[in-house]
Image (cartoon, rainbow, N blue to C red; front, side, top):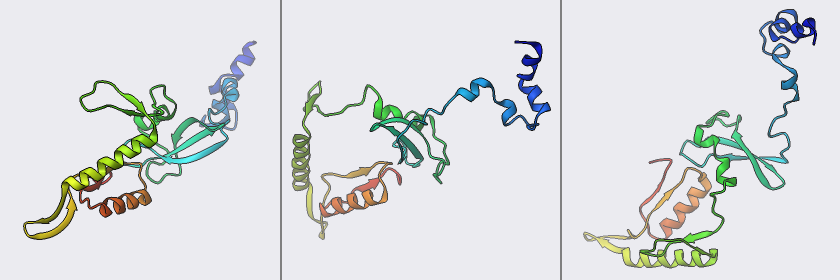
Length: 188
């Protein structure tokens, strides 16, 4: 490479001799920069989502290729976060692709020290049986002479990723079951 070629490849020279005096465009672009492609350019689709960590509700763009999540970034269209994510939200790709992610139901028996896998139907039946038992055991017809017809045997605490429709259905379900302790993380 000759001296002239070397000087012309220097960004400061290109900045002052070209059409980019502020050095924000072509003057700052190197040959290496020109070869770089975005890591999301090969995605088949982009799915809008909400960060699962806190109750802020930052928007996320989930990039999918061949049915698998390849990247998660902040959604610039989100009025909440305007494309920004905190360190936990930026690392949420690990929730879907990390080696520690469980893909089956695990159950630890009372006083047990280890986890055992269960099929989903068995786990759902166990949950239903326990809800019915807790409702029966904790049911109150009256409190201090006032008719209350409620149960204090269980409660509901919703998470940050629940949308309004899901919260509405959860509230309806738990109210129909007689629960009064129904809350959402976003309000706590």
